[in-house]
Image (cartoon, rainbow, N blue to C red; front, top):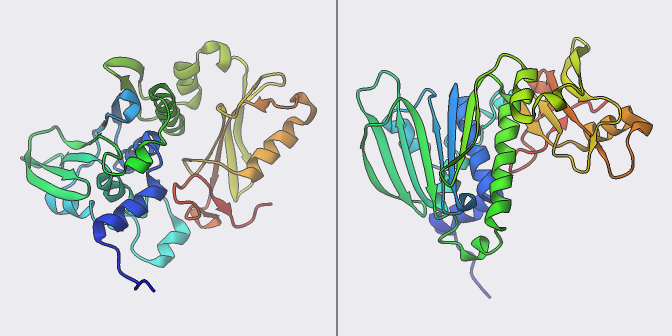
Length: 313
């Protein structure tokens, strides 16, 4: 009978990465969330070959000193929670401290970061979870993460990736989610040296929707302004009756700034439109739900896509 053994750290990291790093778009999602949590006002994303060859996310956030930069590559190292009780009131997009080490374990990884007042920054090169080089870096203040050759050391994962165009569309969708959820941040996406979009920071959701989808869609949306109660506030833009899509790509819900998937909310939206939607059609909604962070559990899904409401009613 086989003896039970502890997994080597590199193998354990690759196993953990399987939950966090599903495909290039999930890498971009995690990096964008880190940038937003760092207070970035401008985030540039560059990809090659659907992100399979290269992904780079550059922000102008708070940056890190060398000690924190190295610590960020350790599993479960985070600046966002300190105790179990903090999980009951999470106010940031990231919190587990899994993203960077998971990504670095299945790629050729480069992190450069610099605090605004620092004379020099830090550059760290990692291959398959092993730190190769730590040195001074001369980048602008903020953080830059470059991920190359995703899953180069996990061929079983790499062969399940889709076509480059499909992976690129998934990445673009993640950029759309973050851009809509955080209109105060400027975003750019460059694909294979071609600028896909350049979104300036805006003051309103309506401006961001116009920049992304144009005036024609915006003209068919109705505003929701602070509907709800003292415990919950619902705002955003919803489509007029008759406006629908064949997928949920524009049926978006954000809870405390986090893009989420919720069967409860999806059912409520469909019930709200009732007979206005034909079978197989989906309403266009950009809903923002704000409630006390203790009333929603975001720690229920490895990729943080789903949340659980303490009182679904």
